[in-house]
Image 1: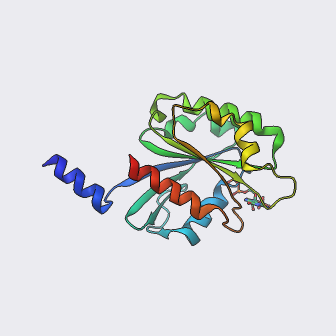
Image 2: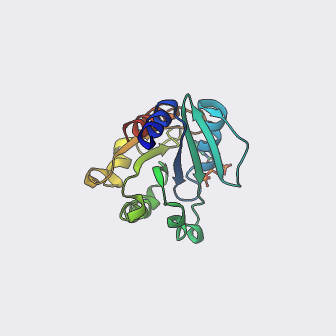
Length: 179
Ligand code: G3D
């Protein structure tokens, strides 16, 4: 009976998938979430909390937590990890100086046991800006190739226009369907 119920819930998508959006301050987290809500997906409920939104793509529903990226808030990221299926790491592709700091935060995060089964989507944001690093350069800077413990994907995007975001959502959907 339990199995049947689980199977039915999977078929009808009657389950929310927890997503956390992380990244340093000014990376574009809030702008990306806003794009998701207004253009790429259906906003199914008004703001649940100051930083939680539910978005839906067909039968797939994501509960998205936008976590602040300032120094004082980064220490508390781990409190959001439990049951997270997807981590979206937003990177300001023009911020070369802080790429190493982003790399350290990413690898620290992935070492946390509560994120053992989470997939990671790295958004190389602000591609519209002159001199921005490409997705391949961001990938190299974050040493993504060294990550074998988690499913990951890097996507170039521009939060202002929404470019790259539909592909991101498709990847997110593929991850929760797989799991
Ligand atoms: P955060 O939530 O990660 O702190 P925000 O970041 O979403 O508040 O974005 C920080 C600033 O970057 C904002 O500018 C926002 O408009 C800008 N931004 C976000 N994404 C992009 C992008 O893809 N391209 C460009 N050119 N700018 C972007 P302001 O001026 O409001 O501080």
